[in-house]
Figure 1 (tube, helix red, strand yellow):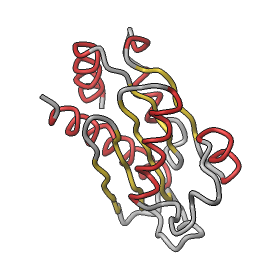
Figure 2 (cartoon, rainbow, N blue to C red; figure 1 turned 90 degrees about the horizontal axis):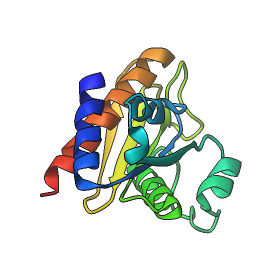
Figure 3 (cartoon, rainbow, N blue to C red; figure 1 turned 90 degrees about the vertical axis):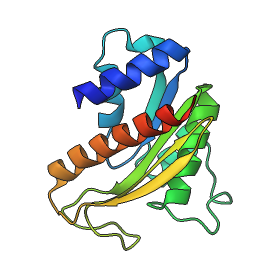
Figure 4 (cartoon, one colour; figure 1 turned 45 degrees about the horizontal axis):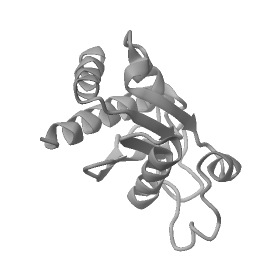
Length: 159
């Protein structure tokens, strides 16, 4: 994972771009990974663990009206979180993550091992990962690694 973070940091620093994170089931581990690099303040501007409806409203300003027709733990919701954290913090890029780590699924019907991850910025992309595992710690680790790999992929698309 460290080599992914080093590559991401290198790209962001070289371009003088920044990132903000809104994560849920990873519990702050995506932000922690990005902050593990010395000099992270050059590219990391902030983040939040958005774990409940209350935190969604307070931290991202996403109201019930904005959630009409949209449910958490979907690519659309992950993208909305990524866009909102990017805009509220004033970053170049936003990363949103939402899912069910386990050992059971979430209240929306998704099985343990389900996450949706989105990147919002000059390029946007959202993906779904299903690990098929109920192991909470292993899922969190897999979600973080996939989020970082997706971020690097999207950053690499920008010429």
